[in-house]
Structures are given as structure tokens and as C-alpha cells.
Length: 136
Image 1 (cartoon, rainbow, N blue to C red):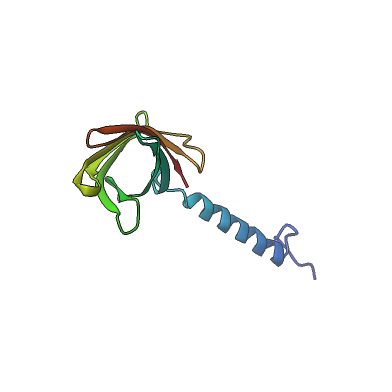
Image 2 (tube, rainbow, N blue to C red):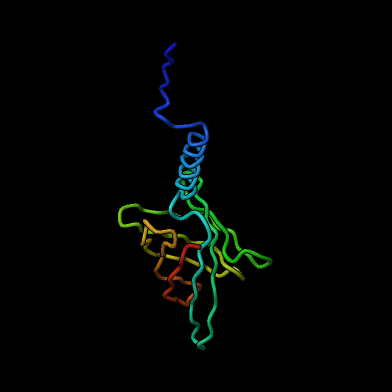
């Protein structure tokens, strides 16, 4: 008796491997999410020439960007960050360490890459610095 086989010559092992590859590739694309989600690291040079690292951990809640500056014992949480997709401008203002008014205004670039950049002006009280954050 003649049997009909419609698997186009693909065996069960190849089907399983193909399914696994499709599942992994879909999960890899889904990891990116909102362009500001994740950890960002930047460095400023103080007036005395010393360097200081600033780390931002940010998440998007569907309306605004929230996060933490310098996670750890002296961290500062912030809310209300805004990303304007017209020009990819990002801004956030909050009370920094020791209550100093802190704000950042910058532009997001290298959108298609994992190590995106966020460059702009960081202001703490009366001190302003140019800074470039890199997504980690």
C-alpha cells in the first residue's frame, strides 16, 4: 500500500532543531524592549581633573522613564524621565545626592545597536558637565 508523507523529507530531529532555533531567535528580539531600558554608564571630569562614574538603571513603565542613579547604598531613585521620539531627545530632573537639583538633557543615538549612546548635559546644582552614557 502506498503511504502519503507530507513532511518534505524533514525528520523529527530536524523539526525539533528548527523549532528551537525559531524560539531562541524570537526571544533574542524580544529582549531589547524600550530603547532606554537597562543599565547606562557614563563618566564626568570634575573641575579638579578627577573622574566620576555615573550609573543609571532605567525602566519604562509605559508612560515615563523611571530608575536609579548609582545603585547601591547612596543611590537616588527618580521618576518622570521623558523620551521624545522626534529627534530621540531624553530629559529627566530629580533631587540628587545631598538634595542637589539634578537634571540631564541628551540625545539617544546608535539605536540599532546594543551599546546605544546617550550624550548630553548633566547638571548638579550650579555645576554642568558634558557626558556620554553607554548602554551596557
